Structures are given as structure tokens and as C-alpha cells.
Amino acid sequence: MDQAARIAELEAENAALRQLIAKLEARIVELERQQGKHSGNSSLPPSTDDQQQRQARRKPARRQKGQRAKGKQPGAPGAHLQRVAEPDHVVGHVPDQCRGCGADLSGAPVVGVESRQVFDLPERRAEVTDHRAERRRCSCGCVTAAAFPPEATAPACWGPRARAAAVYLMVRHHVPVARVAEVLSDLLGAPVSTGWLAGLTAEAADDLGPFMDDLRNRLADEPVAHADETGCRVAGAKQWFRVLCTALLTYLAVHPKRGNKATDAMGVLGRFGGVLVHDRWAPYWTYERISHAVCNAHVLRDLAAVAEVARYRPWADALACLLLDAKRRCERALGQGRAQLPAGQRRLVRSRYDALLDEFFAAHPAPAAGWPKGSYDRDAANLASALRDHRDEVLRFVADLAVPFDNNQGERDLRMAKLQQKISGSFRTDAGARHFATVRSYIETGRKHGLNPFDLLAQLFNRRPWMLPAQAAVAAA
Image (cartoon, rainbow, N blue to C red; front, top):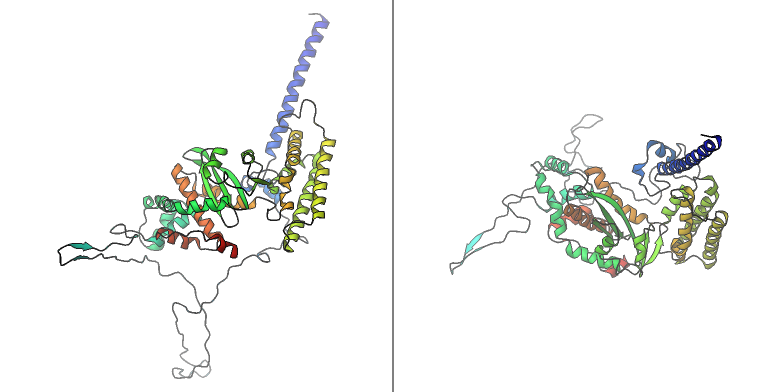
């Protein structure tokens, strides 16, 4: 082989190696980007953070000026025992002899009484009620039997409060069935069957049809609602829990699909005409009657991810500061009883927002071939484009103070579906997941109205489920 041919061969080999190196470098960047994702710069839950990420996000041990103090925060609800006017039992304690001279005090006058009340659980045993239905013969010869109450379904069966306690533990606190059986057996002093427990959630859900219909109708008429979704394992396959909620309503549902088939099956968004707060997930934008509001907590996390690249940090930090400053302005205006920010402040926020996006595109023009897939540049450009295209939705909370800054309400209401899997494992059947969602919707909505979840379930098993109060009563409250 002559020298020219050898040089040509080496140049071709070098060109191939350079292409391979470029691909490998791009792959390394993509893997580093994926590895660097955590709950502070993406939508990943805090439970996915490793120890190093948690340590980095942990607050310093010594509290700095302006940081929150430890313990209960001002205005947060506390929990303490209060004395009752009429206790269940009164026990008197009489001194038998004088602590000074030792004389007998049995006939001495009472000059004062000090009272201390002790709150405790009743004796550990189930209360048994024997229902006896008489049969009586009429003078005509016909024998008529009295009807048993609805809870007396068998010669020996658990009553409404025992059923309520079981579902309360399984659905509200996510305790596995076997452990609920152990807990109730220990507390009630009688054996509790896991098979019986496994059917209770379905029994509760079957009586909630009218409640769920009313819940869907109420949500469709709300001026502002929140939406979110999360994956779950049901019968060995991935399905999706979804939530539509407000400060007073919670509607959970589960569906094998994630897209519009699932949202349509909920039966609300097709009729909803208010403002929907969400995380920019594409299917929500297809509902044209809806006004949209973007969750700015998600935007801040996306900006935090972009800020990890030095050349984008000044822009990302400036936009994050603008959004947080606008949030503080809105909170002050709400405290003053306003429905909107003053017009001058709204114009200031919008003009600064537009200026920051213009600065981004001027400083980082897209190449003719487009940004490389999976690169930090592509992520930053996509985020800036989304914030430009959905400016009105991102700043909806500035235009209307009834719209919150973020979608935390939706995330809080959906988090329990994830916690159920973390504690009790995946759902074994489709029906089991649906029943959980229905009962959880009932419990959480009632709890938001200030009701005790156990009492709500006891009403349900007494065949008198709680129903949503009239809208006029809710508005008055």
C-alpha cells in the first residue's frame, strides 16, 4: 500500500473515531443529566432521592435568621386535650388522716376539691348486641316475623363501627389486610378474618354511587380545580391514578390508560369550564372549554435543572426570582382582600417576564440543525419555548388571585395513592384499586369539610352515607 492510500485510510478511521467519540460524549451528557435528576430539579418524588441528594437538600443544623423555627409554626393547628363538662365517670378521692397530727378525717368538712380528668380507651372487648326478631301469630292464623336491622346480616357478624375501623385502617392509613386483622383481633378480643376484611372496601364503595355522582357534578361547576396523575401497579400491570380536586373536594380514579381516555372516563373535564391547575401535561390542553394555569412549583424545579449549567444559571435564577416575587405580591394582595394585583404590578411582572424570555432567545439562538437530542441546551430551549407559548397560563395566578401559584393541592391529594403502594404493595385486582379510589374520595372530601373519617365510615356502614352539603351552605361556611 502506498503512502497516500495509507494516509487516506487513517483519515477515514480518524473521522469514524471522532463520530464515535461525539456520540459517546452525547451519551455521557445524557446519562449525567438523568443521574442528576432529583426531587429539587424534576418531578421525581422525594422518596427517589439518594442519601447524598437528601443531605444536599437538608437545611443547615443551625437556624439562620429568617428561617422557620423548629416545631409547630404560628397559626398551624395544634392538638391538645381539653376538659369536658360532663365526664363519663367521676371518682372521688378522700384523705383518711391528717398529714399534720394524724387525726381521722372521715367527718371533717370539705374545704376544696381539685379535679384532674384522665382520657383513656374503654376496656378491650367487643360490645355484643343480641338482636332477637320475634314471630307472632295473628288471630287469623298468619305468623309474621320482625325484620332484623341492616347490620345483622348473619347469626354472628361484625357491626358498622367494627367495619368502619377496619376500612379506616386499610384505606385511610394504608395498613395491610393481615396487619389490620391482627390489630382488630387484639383490640376487640375476638378473631378477625382476613377474608372478611378483603371484601369490606368493595362493600363500602358499592354504597357510594350517589355520592360519587354528586361529587363529579360539583367538580364540573367549580371555578378552579387541580389535576394530577401518577403511575401505579394494578394486577401486575402499570395503571394510572388520577385526581381532580379543590380545597373541599377530592375525586380519585384509576384507569389503565394515561391519556384522554382516562380523563374522559372520569366524567368531569368534558363539562368543566373553570380554571384547571396542572403540570403542563399535554392531554389537559385538549379541553378547549377549560382555562389553564401552569403549576409554578414544576416551573421552579425545571428552572433549577437548567440552572445546573453555568451559562443558563443567571437567566434561570432571574426568572425563578421573578416568579417568587410575584407570588409574594399576590399573597400580600390577598391579605389586603384584593381579587387582583394592582394593574401596575401586573404590567411590571409581565414586562419583566417577557424581557427575560427575549434575553434567552437572543443569547441562545437555535442552530440550523436544531439542538442535539437529550442535551442540556435542548432542555433549556424547550423550557423557554414552553414558558413563552404559555405565558398567560404561567402567570394566571397574577391575573386572578383565586388561582393558586402551584398545584400542591393536587399533589397532596394524589400522594396517598402512592403511599398505599409503598406500605401495602400493589393492588391485586382492578376492582380493588377502583374501590380504594372511591372510598378514599369519600373519606378525603368529608375530612376537608371538618368531619371525622371514622364517623364518616360508620355512617356509610349504617347505610346512611354522608352527602355533600348544599352549595349555598358551603359558600356560607
